[in-house]
Length: 623
Image (cartoon, rainbow, N blue to C red):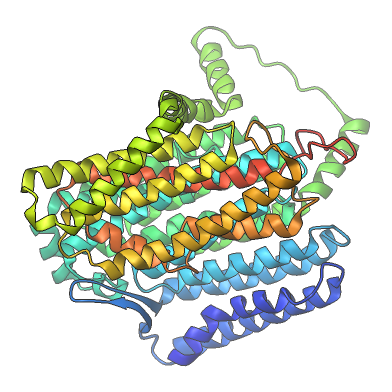
């Protein structure tokens, strides 16, 4: 059964590579490959789960591929199968297969037909990696694929302004969740001194002893996991991204934000439940998030004018109740609730255009105004206040803009001097000095060594901040990002005698290839268009589709998506930051938070959105 288990995980990826062989005009071949891969996967998952139950339902754990191994760390794929995996895999296979069939008619003759099915298969591969994951490293690989496919499907209608803008908003919040997962992995490595598999978390005595020994550090890990789960499942205060994500095709909204992806926060809590079930503070936090989300999301859903937004907030409210059920330990109820909610929301989203048409028709011929209910005093003020707050979605977008993105942009703008010529010269000299210090580290006093590595980490963060707000020159923004990563690597290497050259090369190799390819693409685009600033969205994908694709691949490689050695390098980098290095981990985590957003922002502004040239049709700002 273990052989079949790994085949189940990689079958959608095989379908993805086969679908790439056909041109966009070969709709029948593309859909046939997709139906074949997803239908076979559904059949195998059902048969596999049935046989697993018939053979006493023992937990399966398979150590698949070892990517990197040394004395203190081992990075490997680990696949796991239990009753949670069985439910999520069967549900995911069934819904994805049905949505794929629906999409073949819904997107018939759409110019993005092939692109949609390619992305759908890649998404489903990431989903399988998450639900079949046996350790945090494997889960994070699937988590990353889900994030990037979300960005691509929200921005599916790339000739419109709002889908592209909302895709960037969504990936920005997703990145916060990604960094929280990275920090949870980082602290886990230091506490356990090994890769923790989910099967080990089920050893109660081992986990309880570990919690008693490292109580406050464990609280930090749990907080990071809860934030990551809350963001992925769009819980308060991270709920505003979900209705914005509905700008993509209705079918992708159904499979992503109605049924599968949005419930993975619940899956993360279920999978890590043995780790925090004995900690009352963690349970109270999750219950509070769930209750507040259920109440606020329900109020918002009742006043929304858009049917997809109503469905989104209704789903958020139900997931909030699931958070409460997970914390209470009612896991069978959670799984039943999850399956019912996923199937209902998928159905509602797929039929929403038709239902909306019927309701408009009915309202046109049979409209009757409701009778006014007289209210006075406190009752009127209370209802009016809740109504206005719900209509404005409790100002969650404004909250994040004021507390997160505006301060970041303000700080970035104050760093204009960083991109001047004399500042670049000084930074190059400082970096060369750091390389010399790294080569002769044994002769440097300990205190000076500690101060230098913090300085380099801070410089790396400053460079990413400056790139994040750069608007005048895309090449300059890209160069600042490249330079920042070299400072980040050196900041960690300076304080760690165990950080070896091969680990540095592992990260830098993937980074350099992506950086050079990206630079070549930018210079080619500049030669064709002369001006490549980031003041607006320019839609160059229509005239330069191959250049756009190559640059997108370089962006994904630059942010260390799991097809480059840099993905392993990031894990190694974080594992070498000591758990007491608070400032360095803050600088590094913030840098990686802004890195992906800055890189994808360059891609989106140069290649997506309404075309800047007048001979191309321009869509309305909203869909």
